[in-house]
Image (cartoon, rainbow, N blue to C red; front, side, top):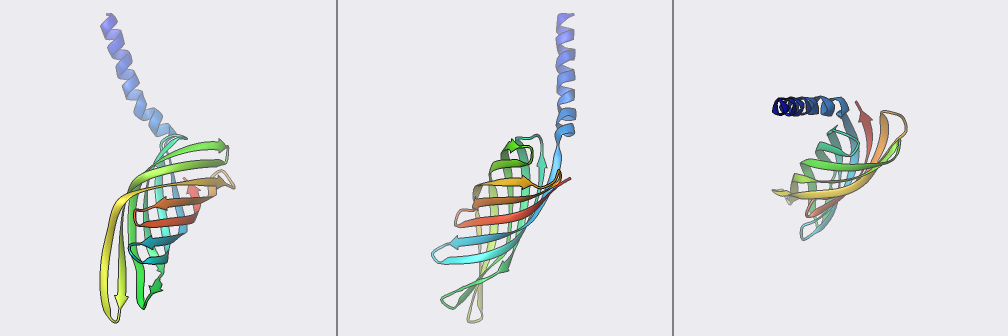
Length: 167
């Protein structure tokens, strides 16, 4: 009898975990601009439009994906350099300091494609690496806010600012 009660309690607990997680899960998107400083032998400064989509499982943990497309190129020594695209996925740990302000750290994996043009010759290079960063989000209403963050993408560093919308 005791084993049956323990098994039933354990089954109820296991079945309730997804319901609890689902009840707390919220989603968010960001739309912003990133200033990217890449150093792969030559220093370049690029700009990118950036979109992120995240699922926040509780007030401390989220998972997010990001995509970026180059919008500002740089020319170094007659070579035009641009960011074609960048994609990444991150685990995010956050800490709410106040009702509408939180800081976070994130770690994940990113891939980016850069293009260089010189005298009509075009060459592309990919950069796949572990990425990590820190930042803060301040909400000016229950669902709308501003996010500032820094992320290291291996050979590139990015500072970004974005509008945040919770769903």
